Image 1 (tube, each protein chain N blue to C red):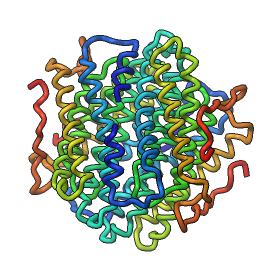
Image 2: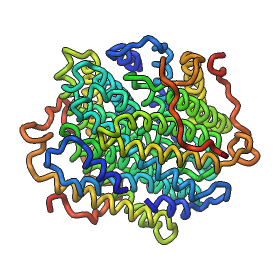
Image 3: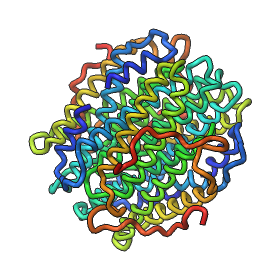
Image 4: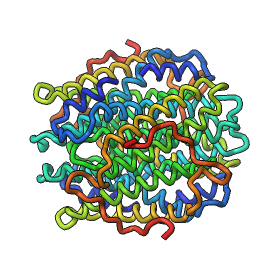
Length: 157
Length: 157
Length: 157
Length: 157
């Protein structure tokens, strides 16, 4: 999917604040993981032991939805939305790590789970690397912008 | 959309660990916000001053994608996926707060931005309340389950 | 979800060529059906007789994806895209009719299938009514625009 | 994205009624086209001449949604859903042809439109080839299954 990087390079806006190689790698990993998790959920559903695969199907479907959304958000370069990017990347890492853990338990038995676990680990890693590359600056949406003020109470408050 | 609560009540699994009223409210808020943000992005695109609405369109589209994914993940009750739920709810709160902030800046000028900002604030609030209701226990995927071990390095590490 | 109609009314572009009541009804029906089908798939997965519910789960998930995409496409009013709208509405009708047929077979046994079948029939109907309202004119993307020239061979050619 | 074919081969169900090479090619084309259209919409939004790119942005976003849904539906192999597949593939062809037509008009000026038009044409072609491979038999959901009975009136009736 070298087309991802090609499209990033063809974007008229380049503020130079993001590592495009890592960004393209994360987008590709998200899209591959979303498709693989959707395929794994469907393959698990067709297994004789489907009743034992319920948790795996659920985490597969959650991971597919989250990776697809993350890939879409990462694709946009117009303006800046760094706080959102960061939070969604954290959610994606968590979803990928959880799904990998579930699929790894069936990797010896089901080839689709083995392949899916690998796609999840690759995506978890790509999200982590992009998070690292986004910098350790104060949370915000870019230079000079502060994080949005929340009107909602903190959870548990 | 009372159908959301009706479907939750018709689900065969009920472990009693989640507040179904708050869950249904969050699902409904996510779906309403996703549709409203998609509509606001499209309305902004049709404005004469579209060039000044770019940032708003981008945050609208990001928020639409994230709310749709969050609504889908919240819909699933089979098994448990609490760590993922929590991370995705945090991302959704951030996306809604950010989009609300952007739309509020144009609320006097564009009715669609005013309505959209309100939908975003409702969704931000519903996510925060559900996060609070999920309990302040140790992160994990449910009783007796620990959070997934991550193989990826921490960002910035 | 009266917010759908409110957002349509707040859109700066109104070419008066589409019935907004029927459009809003179709968007709402698509979003309700997408969420209900996703919930039904998950409830079927949790049933003891999950092995017998495989076909129903698959049609539920297909219908959820198709309804969500149809709702998003219908939401956009900027420019015209009538040929695409029409084709997607036809696909949505087919998906809803198919899913309703599957769920109706389990409606006596599973309340979630009964509710889901009803949501599918409502969405099928709403899509059909909007298709009727789009007019029986020549296919195209609007007045003065012809359908896109295809470079792909006809299926089966 | 050879992982698509690998996952299809790892699926426990194989009724041999579908050409897996063409199926994998269509899934890959849908996913590439969805991502490319989303990127093109965002790049168009960042152009100085954004006001003239409105129609292109709208068809890009519609095409992205439809291709993503089509890719997800094609990914599922459990059970059969041929009538739905066929209708969704027709919608996807139409969306891709329309978006290609729009992007081709700006291909000389914007590299992202040129690349996007090519991705749309590839996806249009892959959908057409898969439609051809699905066979010219009577519409239905598979051997021995008839098309779903519709309760909705025909459009325009």
